[in-house]
Image (cartoon, rainbow, N blue to C red; front, side, top):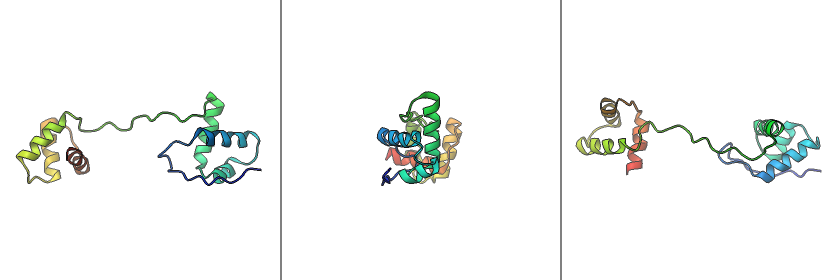
Length: 123
């Protein structure tokens, strides 16, 4: 008999533990329940169960894959100096105006939200 797990997930924010993965695979190998029932039982997404089983069948691995790194920043660290200078020279500029000046200077178009994050990072 499998006891229901009180497992709270962050929906992709954190990798599931090896113990949980092994327990799920053990239950699946013993045909204790369908994949959907296992997902409900362990409090994980059905897609996670499907991917775990597919990966186990093809590679034999169950460990989480490393993070791929995400999207590269539109404005590299080298542009920080430019943004600081623009803010110093044009202190009353709006985010859109700063974006336009960066586009004119660097040829890189960024959104107001991106400019806001750059300014927050720079303090």
